[in-house]
Amino acid sequence: YFHIEQMAIKVFGCLLKCSTEVEMFKLIHKPMSVLHRLLDITKKNSTSAIIDEKYHYELVQDISTDERYFHTEFSEHPLPLSDAIVLINIATFIKEHKWYEMLNHLEISSKGEHFILYQYADNNIYPTIISSALIQTTSNKHDWLFFDNFFQNTKWKPNLNADGLLSLSHATSMSPLARSQFVDKSSTEIENDLFYSILDKTKACEAIRLTISGEKSKANYHLYLAQKGLAMALKESGRDIVFTIIEKPAMVLFYQSMNL
Image (cartoon, rainbow, N blue to C red; front, side, top):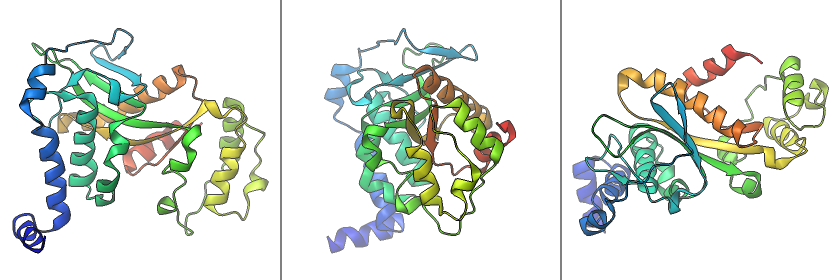
């Protein structure tokens, strides 16, 4: 193990970078016998919705049981949907943004309900994934990253806009919210109060690990399509309120510009 670590540091710079590359390699280079046996699966989902003429979006209840194959920009050949999403998560979150903590939680991205946005390229039977996001229901709130201590900070200043709270109450199945009930409370207390104010918990969910792939020149456009498709898909599935964690400043500005 010492020699492996020394070699990893020599070639990759650190053990975490090496582990990241190993996980990507394992997905891209799965036994070709398995790929050859399954590559004839070209099922299309007739229930997917179309956005902007050529982009499809849908909610997949459990990606681990989906038999379709998808292209990604990180592999020369198509991969099963579950593997494709894990590969994109590793390449974007871990390799690009260096969120190495996710190396211990890759299985989260390999199963469960996901939103996907994809398109069919000319002369290609397999669609290319543009965006994906993990959707978690309130039944497993204990696993939500939104409420994890890692994503809390005592220095945060809540933005308790009265109009926003009123709009939130009217748009969702929530108990009436007043600014006064949140004064002098920590962000953790406020978030929990908001959650427990929801009368029908089936109308709430968490959406995290939103990825954007494809041409860099179209990154902002794909980000816009992904947010629009995600909002539409969740609304169509009966979700009125979504808890999420946003790290992209452009996304925060996008939602602020929409105001209510």
